Image (cartoon, rainbow, N blue to C red; front, side, top):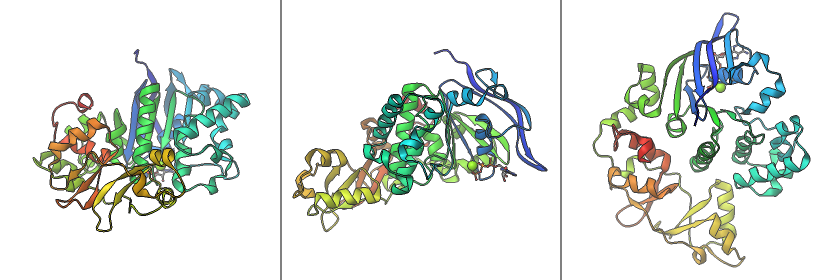
Length: 383
Ligand SMILES: Nc1ncnc2c1ncn2[C@@H]1O[C@H](COP(=O)(O)OP(=O)(O)OP(=O)(O)O)[C@@H](O)[C@H]1O
Ligand SMILES: [Mg+2]
């Protein structure tokens, strides 16, 4: 694939009166890169993103998209090139989900048929029912709104996607699902994505390049592996997190240290309707099934529910056996590789008696692996 810089910042500053929002920003983003901007609150991340979209004008310096200075592009040309997910979702309350998704295609004057087809495709992608297109944002849960916000950026098929904390208020499993979706879409389509986050786990998981911001300055640009190996400043070290750096030196880590306890479970005697409402309420796509003593019996997921749904059935009737689980005292280095190879979103963790204790998610593993298991090898190759 030929590589050209799709976005380039040349010594860009943005000031508000006496206040410097960002300063001396020099950044080259190549085609197909997944760039994560990370930094503390107020460090200038949103400012950088908005200048790319020309929602803000630089005070000094220049920004180029595909070698054209953006101040010379007209707004329609710019919209054809870049899609945008704003911080805090940003759905228009007085527009239906359909109107929200097709906002930019409408500005670009797509024919009705093409807009409809695109909206249907996208709503399917985030696993929401098609009739949600006719609803208003307030008729959706916060997480559902956020999913719409994310896919909306894909609606107009632009090559550059800007995302400002798109996964902020989601529960860990939904967040991970959306992260996987965005990552795989990016790999498939070769789009260039610039995503702002506070979350180092997210940056390590998604980025090909991480840009660390501190008080308006870019303090480091590096691949995730480089960043972990050679944090440029104490601030970067702090962003990576002491825990992660200590663990990088640790030899043995048991499963329970990275286990999460936010799993959702159900007993086998409950009805499928109960299972469905629990999934909706917790916004998950699978439930672990445990008996009244909390022993792990199996799992049900949205697919088996859809395929086998009948009103009188109970959870026990459609239960799938768990083929892979972990014991809390097993060592991660012995098990992690197998989890990743299987491509599971999460794996249940039990104690020696088979009681459900928690789950291990893929993203919590990935950053551990950087540190512990492969150490000096290149992670991207191994996955
Ligand atoms: N319109 C404005 N007028 C004055 N100062 C502003 C304005 N907009 C932003 N700033 C300042 O510019 C700096 C950078 O803001 P920016 O929104 O880019 O931060 P951020 O990194 O996105 O933060 P957060 O993580 O909280 O979203 C902040 O100090 C902010 O107070
Ligand atoms: Mg911001």
